[in-house]
Image 1 (cartoon, rainbow, N blue to C red):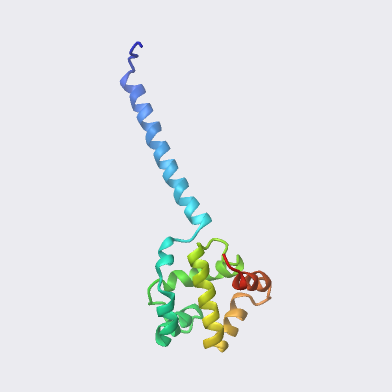
Image 2: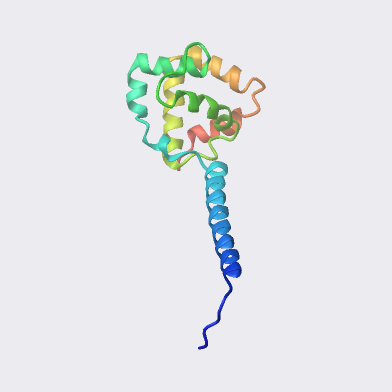
Length: 141
């Protein structure tokens, strides 16, 4: 096969196109993660530890309900994601995150029924997500 000589300007153009493709692929990968799922860092949260430590559990609940500061690990992120999680019945959650949400909501309803009522009125005042979210809560994956 015959070698083809390419001018330096063509080589730069090819290199620039290659760099642009790499940047584009990186941006698309990041967008897919943002659009289609929550960060896997939330998979590693020790939900049992939080639920079983009343002070810790109360701290997270108070953050979500704006009754206290959001200084606990991931509490600020949880607070931001919570409306979407409820509205979409955890559609973007990983299987582990879905288990965590189910376990947390169950603990909230059993251990802090008054706060559970506040959650319902704050995050679904019209009851428009209740059926889908309840179906998610009793479901399994």
